[in-house]
Image (cartoon, rainbow, N blue to C red):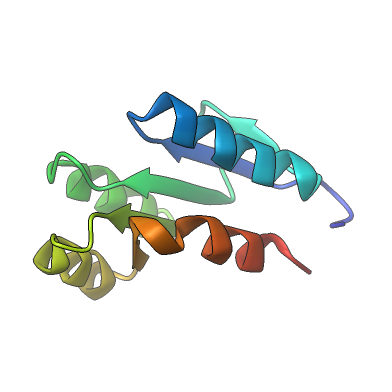
Length: 103
């Protein structure tokens, strides 16, 4: 567990998935925050594609971003990677988040 809990911003429309992500964050000893300007990591669903603007703003502030979208939206995932985010298909979000939060 980290010395101080990290603040993690979560942006997803799926309430069940949001609950799973929050559980992973809590299990790692970290906190979910609603303040996207003061977070250590942002987990962003890239649907709708306009979320790329949010992703860009977070990255410009130096915030690490784990972005995700459907595997059929490969172009959107590629764009997120090109901006500097770690971008994975929906099926890989939980495992990747666990890995990122493990010291």
